[in-house]
Length: 251
Image (cartoon, rainbow, N blue to C red):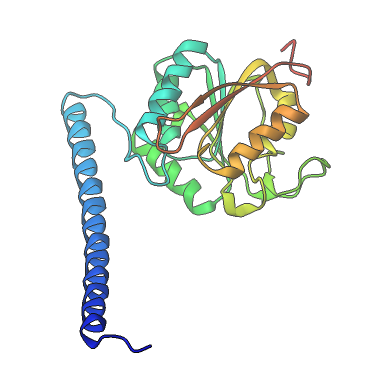
């Protein structure tokens, strides 16, 4: 059966038009994304400038790999609602500055931050110094190592030199997902003995399947309860409560 040459030309032109429209749509999306990032950065810088001109402390740039502004606000709300005394942070960054501000203001008593990457550790140390918070944070360089605990299947922070206080809050923002399957799972089996009953594990990046699977396993295997999931932040947050029974109950 032969095809009408005129129809063939029309269909070919329609395909070409469709391809051009698709390419233009991609370019427009790229421009839109770039514009949003630029506007956000400028607004963030302007707010920081006003605070610094008034002699107040500010925060480093948020978003991308850093904790997002809405996540940071939720963490701040959790601190002011639950009043944790001792906080541990798995993975350093902008959130370390946030907690450093809270320690300086007397809203938490102690902050321990773990960082496995030597470059990020140095950057975090420089940021703390830049913001005048170096004395407010116990920042540790803790490379990822294998652990003898049979429940731990991926490398996790080497905390042999860390002196833990009974923990009331743990922000789980590391290790990176590329470390291995359920890279953040070891936080529960390796930290619960240092936690008071009621300690909150705040899981960042809960939008990812690996973090969701991690929380599911925590709840299944340990005395932990999921008490909140915040889906409004860009990366989502889950809040899991330790119910007690692993060693720091009377601390």
